[in-house]
Every structure is written in C-alpha cells, then in structure tokens.
Length: 283
Image (cartoon, rainbow, N blue to C red; front, side, top):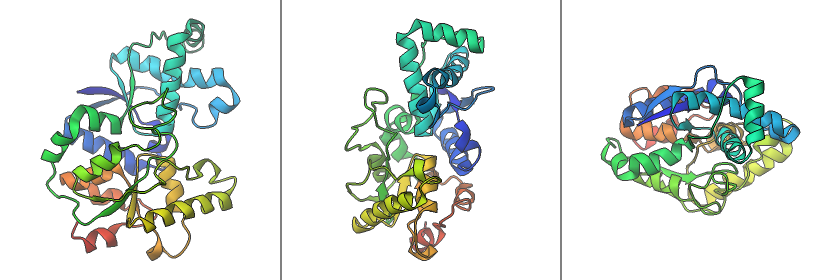
C-alpha cells in the first residue's frame, strides 16, 4: 500500500510530533509513504479567501507533482486535505484551470489520482480489525473525547468519508485501541483556531467551552487529527497546567497502543504534558 505523502507546513514545524507519529505508525502498519519532492505550501487557510486562482495553483502544483509519482496522496492535516481535495475537484471540471497550472508551474495535471486523509486510509483501507490485531498495549482506562473540528469531514461534497454532523471514524478507531470513548456534542464544533492570533479572547472562550463540554462528558483528554486544532486547544486553555486537558494526535495513541518505542518522545513536544495521566493508568 503506497501513497504520495504531503506533510504540509505545520507538520514540518509546530506539529513535528504529528509528522513523526504519522511516519512511524504508517511504517508499522505497512503503509509506504513517499514524500512528494519539492512540495510547496497548499495555501491553507488564507489563500483561497484572497485569490481563488492562486489557491488552486498552489494546491494544484502539489497534485501535479504527486501525479508524476502515479500514486494517490496521503495527507494528515485537514486544512491541507480540504485544499488539495478542492483543487482536485475544481481541476477535474475546469480544463482552463488545468491549462493555467501548466503555464504557471510547467506541470501537466489530469486529476487521475485521489487525495485521502490518513484517518480515512487507516479506518477504511487498513481496517480496524487489522489494527486491533496489532494492539499490544490496549489503552484501558483512558477516557477520551474524539474531536474532529471543522475541516476534517466538511463540506461533505468535497471530503465525504464520514458523517459531516456526527462522524464516527475517530471514535471507532479509539475504541479499537481499547480506550473509553465519550459521546459528546462538541466533536465538530469550531475551536476558533483561525482566530488564535488575531482574536485571542474569542479563541480562548471557544476552547474553554469545548474543553468544558468534554470534561462534562467524562473525558480526561481530547484527540484530534488537526495540527491547528491541537495547537489552539493546548495554547488557549486557561488555568494551571494540572487543570488542563491533554490533547493527543490520533496517530500518537495508535503508536502507544502498538508499542512503538519512540512514542514517549512525541509527548515531550506537547505544551500540556499527558505523562501524569498516562502514568496513572500504567500506559
């Protein structure tokens, strides 16, 4: 199972632990990731708001580079995922846009390959039964709130691998790992990530409401597939560190359950340490 891997800017910088866990987990599950050579920023999340053609070209260049590799694309960041999927769909229907990409980037593109989010690939290509068979350290006792955020499953005409209002893929995956997954109504609410720098008070309020909802549902930590959500949920929680909910990437918890030895090194990059919670549960 081989994919052209698009890490995107966040996974190269602030979400380095996400990238490390993605690569380690994929290697463990037999998913070969071939990083797209000379990839560029996809333009998320501001490019398409200011210049639609430029946004399509930025994402389209990555699509064209991946097409030369003759593989579907795997992406872990939901913002990158929706930009690549949007450009892919637009260029399928608009030859002028494809021709424009060829003129500006000197690359041809025929939209022959698809873009998949890694959560979709693990749930629907690897399969949860296969994943369960590889678990060596079940996450027993770990009470989690699965948080999908805005981008991962919406809009459904662009992404479409789970229910846009009540998705279950991440919940089911965490249950497969042995965790106690709490049902809650905030799983697709916005965390205010795009306001985190310009309107900090609003972002903090939105994060506070989400974390309080997760606590009331009985969760001791939150789980996301989005680097922007992860950073915002960690940075904008108020209170002392001991009162804050740890936030995991879903790939980190897969790594923990599969017994991948470098898992603990990823957690050291978190702003809210999950070590106390995991140690209390013997994980």
